[in-house]
Length: 77
Image (cartoon, rainbow, N blue to C red; front, side):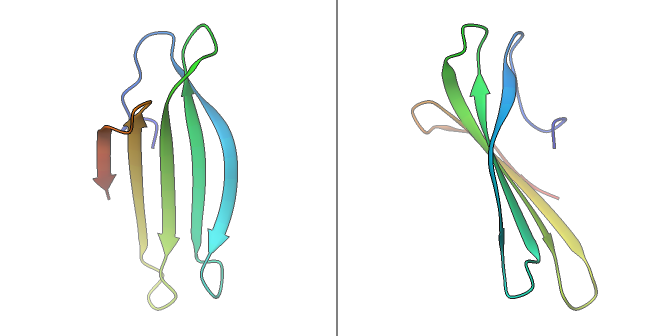
């Protein structure tokens, strides 16, 4: 996931929360804040990791937004 998001020098991810969804908790969702050197939150990242119940195929996605909600990265693999 980290290779797919765009961080400028000095920016880092801060893990905010984790939750699971689905009848068998087959979807993991992690939410991160993008923090600059001053500690200000300048964006967000949501990483979703889904494992299908039938066939165990795995799909991941990442959605990165800046502080005003503009989408920077939206990828699924």
